[in-house]
Image: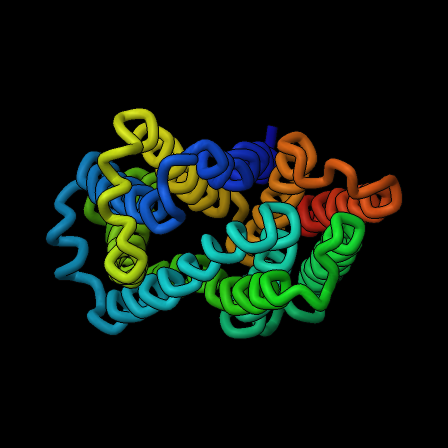
Length: 335
């Protein structure tokens, strides 16, 4: 089996984990949103990234000392911007559900996170068979998530929560902001590639070298999340609810954090196995798989119950387009 094929299999796992990471939030009933997101941030962005990086990247201090300061600050800036977008992701899921919010967010993220690296770093590949296949695949992703978004709006209308409802429009606004910012994860990994090269030269295994990027990116992303959650807990007087959740709620937040961070690490490994265009090909693939997973969970957890047959038919059509996009992007390296 080729390295690209193995990379696609890793992406399947990463997409399934990332598309499922908000599911435990449905069961933290004794916590407000900000309580759950606070502990998710601690696990996913503050604890897990440094722990894994120190275990897998030798002489970490030397890696950052040898790397360009400009590269490190770019990674940190991408992380901070992405951290703001994660706040909006959590708010969007809370407002309009997993299916619709993930569709809008990840569609925008797929386009921005793939096309910018292609044009900026591989301009000579844009008009080749591989480059055209990438753009066709990204276009299919946008169409697929657009169809899923239409299905979500039909669902809201069928449930008596049509387009005029303020919370739906606010949720869509949150989704757009989050979608644009979510691409910064892939841009941080792409433009932080010199860190991977330094880490490998010093002794890190190729599959673990992306952790040299993930640690500063995630830590920077954790700052706006923690600040926002603390502000909300102060404003809403929900800090006292933390004690009411007990070990079960903390454990659920830890599961959320593990699924999200592990999926990101696996994505970095997969992208490294897919050649020079790994982040260009892998990112829209990753996004498509997350949308499909989140959509399935939305159906299984009752988000589409009593919505009628038509919205579900539209939604499955969108998923079908995303499946085609996956095949196009997975085969793009052969064109």
